[in-house]
Image (cartoon, rainbow, N blue to C red; front, side):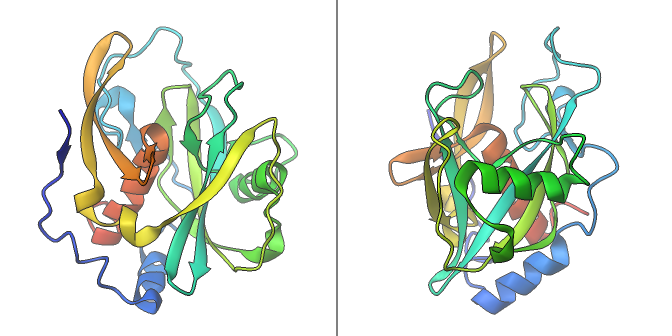
Amino acid sequence: MNAPMDAEFADDLTRLSGADLRALIHARVLDAPAAEARFDWRTGTSAMGLPRAVPKDFPETPVHAAVLVPLVERESGLAVLLTQRAGHLKNHPGQISFPGGRIETHDADAIAAALREAQEEIGLTRDFVEVVGFLPDHLIVSGYRVTPVVSFVRPGFRLQLDATEVEEAFEVPLAHLLDARNHVRRRRRFDGREVELTDLPFESRTIWGATAGMLLTLYRLLRGEVMA
């Protein structure tokens, strides 16, 4: 059974003007990547809310990765640019995600990796992107420690999707994701047990898992519920 979260204060963030929301994002995101992964589903402190049990194949040292959290500056307000992964991929086929991937040895840092992956996956070039900060790192079930790189994206870009990795790219109004009435609890099975997670439905799609967790972390940061 799915149930919307308590809608108390649901309109607080959605009532902000575009300029005020932009300023709040600037003020609340981290200035540098976190020294430690802040949200670890293995210890019950994750935005994903996964159980404490650790799968045997989860690495002691997770692979460091980075994703770009692109906030497109539309006239109607900020919109989150997301991708739907190609259906033939081995890991997370068809799921909704941010552009990103592992940090390679030739990447200077998480920012360089996130920008490189965004250009490779969807053709978003760096000259349209203004990096503003970071969300706390997330440890996810596939064995990665992910640094989310938050950015504003200037309109006018033309995407070119890499069909080997991405099936589709689309935008979701940030106001929709910041409205707690659109946060839906859902029970799913992980590693043989049932857990309660929070999904973010939008039109015919459902954002869930690590991507939903990172968006909910942004929501909590902006509300002041998560301290940087």
